[in-house]
Image 1 (cartoon, rainbow, N blue to C red):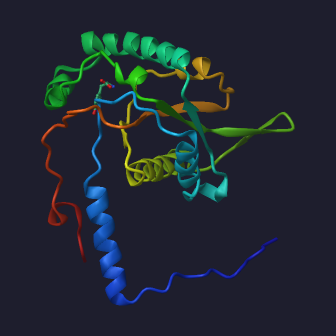
Image 2 (cartoon, rainbow, N blue to C red):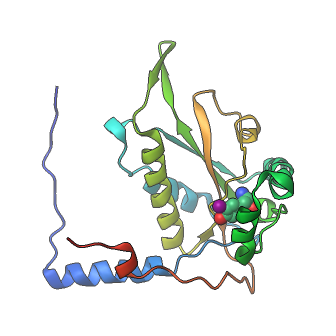
Length: 218
Ligand code: IYR
């Protein structure tokens, strides 16, 4: 049974279209992953809009198989930092290959994750592998793809609001399920600290690939 409504298309002239496409690229080109956060607060309402934006992502059969758990509590942030640092210590002291450690050198990372307490908000993204309908497990579709796209929207919304974020993947991160009291059908996908950059924050000097390197026109 289908229920269709008209799609109202934005009407842009070719000039407006090029202008908008180019301006959006300029905006997104300024986005950087940050590890140095200020403890300056961010209003809950801003985080709500950011999460709503993430929720506009497409998903397999429109199942919207995601949960965004926003943490502002110092106690829970401390718990998350302690658990993440414990795992990361193991990663940096034996679990990651020499090649991996070498590849991470330009980023200056180690097992210390102070930003998990400094950032005013942590958004833990969960993937919902299945739903429980009348006690029955019903699988969602293309969960990884759907949640990956929604997280991309989340990061774009954070940047658009003038805030910064880090896509953090403490590994393994099952501890988030317990720390945040999430149900068994949700698995941690990514942990995203959100806030303002610290005064004098720096980022690695990176270059993005050119259009010729990432785009193929046939
Ligand atoms: N999860 C670790 C290691 C790490 C891995 C990659 I791939 C990065 O781009 C950055 C870090 C950490 O957060 O330190």
